[in-house]
Structures are given as structure tokens and as C-alpha cells.
Length: 243
Length: 243
DNA sequence: CGGCCAGTTGAAGCGTGTCAACCGTAGTGG
DNA sequence: CCACTACGGTTGACACGCTTCAACTGGCCG
Image (cartoon, rainbow over all chains, first blue to last red; front, top):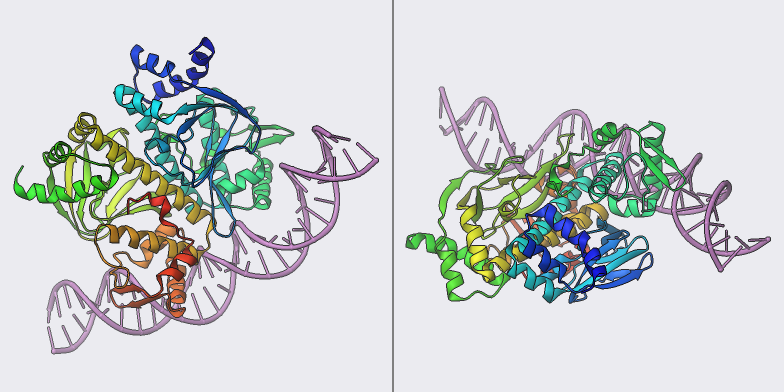
């Protein structure tokens, strides 16, 4: 381990400390994890459905999405990921990947051997708890997404996705709601909300016209956060203070 | 603990053994859990969103559903549960319930103090792994549901829900696909698939007419399992051999 | 300059929702 | 034992939100 690794693992440490109290030994154990850093271009597949990963992917910078594909070829994004996220903790205990993950922007990732992470999880219960808790919050977010695509109309769906994404980004200090750089295309928003890109476009335009958001080239800002939350039916409780 | 408790905890033991190898001490630790048995009528709420449960609910017989409610009042079921399921393991590490759970049939449940279960999880790593793994499979099922309600048409959605439910029931020997007693109404199927009861009715009728399923009063049988799976785009891999 | 990608817009179609009525069965009480 | 009720299921007519298809724009990059 060198000093550079420590800096890189800092993102992970900060995330886990938000999930559970950690003492110095816990933090040291995380700092001792081996990390193989890699820069990847946009749309690089990080995990492929059906494969059996033997390492976990820590997202150091950039954004990623997990998705599944229906028999018709339609794609459904089931979650977006932001810097500091461990993209596939589930593979610590599940052999086969049940979905794929790809970078949606150029990104820097760190690969951690699965066995190392498992060892730390059981040797340092506080770290284990933090990791387990992370999985549970993941689950809570999926439940909210089932509700989102199952029962909300297009406008609420898109608004909800934006609220969640921005709140989580602010928690790790990647962007601010008043002046945001949305890392995803309308196509990706469509994949996440179960809509078509055409309709996402119309929804965004309507939110813009209503003065809720403002879009200029490359920038995206929430003009009226309260109203966006109301439209979205967004209540951050399901994030369990992880954000 | 009396012999009766051992018999009741047998369902839990069998489930956890499917999730991870357990030795005799692990099984004894599970057998020593205190269990407060309760019979509940249909539609009894077992967990309420916003509450902070201090015990976990083991479903001994009957069926249950987890759900969330949108601001419009629309309800979305996010999972069904069958005998042997621990309904709210997530509350081991998340204080606040982010969704509600209710019995959808008369049921027998066993309440286990949260602290006891947590203690066993850390004292007996194999048990802890089994519980953690259970949470991860839960998550995998949610992901599949996001895809289901997000990207499949009404017929596939309903068919998929049926496939999953029946496969899981068969794994715990509750019913067989050739002659099944569906424990849920069309209203509940609608709540789970993001459809209206009226449309669920039309879909089921169409599946019946096509000779894929057969419905008589109280009974429900899959006539052509292969075709149902094809219509459903169902591949059990996401259940990770838990079923 | 040319090509590509993301975004934008309009017109038409369709899958599912909505509304409303009706049926059959089981349960309840007189 | 029958009237009454409640509930789950069934059906038809119509409405509408979103999809589909297709064309076009603007910016970026080779």
C-alpha cells in the first residue's frame, strides 16, 4: 500500500463511516485493502450478467449504472452509482452476477479482491455491519424504484429519479442542486424510468417550462427544489441517511 | 424453548441451510432463538412504514406482502412472502421501516427479538452469512421486479409474477404448479404488477383462453409451464438457487 | 467539411386505465 | 331457510398517457 492508495480508499472509508461507526483499527483495515486502479471510458462494461466476479468494483470517480435486459431487448437501469459506491457488494456472497454494470461516463475504478473484503467484513464486525447495511439500503432504493416505475406517472418518475440522484451526489459532494452537471443522457433517464427517450424529453421540457428546472447546454439546475420534490413524491427517508 | 418451538423454527433452519452450510452448533443457535407465536387474520398489518421494529417477523404459515404507497394513494406491492421467510431482516440494521408488510391470508407468524437474531448473526458467522445472503437475494428479486414493471407488457408481467411465486412456493413445498391454490386476489396481482385489477382480469382470461393456465373456483393450475416461462421472460437465475 | 450523437418536435396509433354495470358465491342474521 | 350483503371476478365502451415513427436541429470532433 502506498499513500496514493490511502487517498483513493478515503472515499470508501467516508462512505462506510456514514453507514456505521468505525474505530481506528477498522479504518486501518480498510486502508490496508489492495486496490487495483483502472481508468475506463464511457460505456465500458464493469460487470457482465452471468459472470462470476472474484473482485469488487469501487467507483472512485465518474458514474455507473446497473441494468438488466428483457427478452424484447428493452433495457432497464435498476440503479445509478456515484463516486464512493461499491458497485457489486452482492457478489461477496452471490456467485453469479444477475445483472450488468457499465460506466456511464469516463470513470476511475478500483478493483478489490472479493476474498480480502470478505475477510475484513468478518474480522472487523463494524466494517461488516457497514457493508451489510449498505446492501440493505441498496434494497430499500430498489423498493422505491419498483414503486416509481410501477405507480408514478412519467413526470413524477423522472422528477423522482432526479431528486434521488442529486441528493445522493450532494452527500458525497459531487455537484450541487442549484448548478448541476447531469452525467446522463435522456436515453439513460428513459432506461431508468421505463419510458422512451422521446417522452423523457417532453417531460423535461415541461418541467423547464413550469420553471421547476433550468436547462442550458451541459448544465442543469433545480430552480424550485420544493416543487420538484412535491412533483416527484420524493421523501428521502428510504435512503436511511446514507445520503 | 420447548419442542414446539423447535418444530416452528425448523422452517427457518431449512431456509438458512439452503442459503449457506450450517453445522450442528449453528443449527442449535437457531433452535435456541425465542419465538413468540401469533395467529393473524387476513390483511393484518405486520410492519408499518415509519415504525421502528425491535423484533423480526418469521412467517410460519400463510402469505404476506410488502408494499409502499404513492402520494396519489396508489399501492405498489414490492414482494410477496411465503412460509419460512423472515419478513424484515432489513430492520436488523435499519432503524426505520421504509415500507409496510401485511398478511394477505390468515397466517401464523413468529416474532424474534431483533437483538437475539443480531447476536446469533455475529456469534455464528455461518448464520450471519446465510442472513446476509438472504438480504442479497431479496435485492436481486427487487431488481427483477424493477425490470418487470418497467419494461414488460401486462401479459409478461403477470406471467412473470406467477412463475416466480410458484417456483418459490415449490421450493418450500407449498403447492405444486399443476394444481395450485393462488393465495392472492386479482387486486393483489394488480398491486404487484403496477396494473389495474380490470386489466389483470383480462390478462388472466387471455392466458386461460390460450391454454397456458386453467382456472376454476379456488384452484389455479399451470397447464403449459414452458410456455408460461416463455411469455414471462422468466429465468430463475436471479433467485440464486434460493428456490 | 462531413458525420455522428443527443436532443427536439409533430402526427398517429395502441396498450392500458377508467367508469360503470352485472354476476356468482359465501357469509350473516332474522 | 331465505333475504341481504359483501366481495371477488367479469365484461363492455370509451378515454388518455405514452409509444412509435419519422424528420429535423445544433454542437462537437475527426
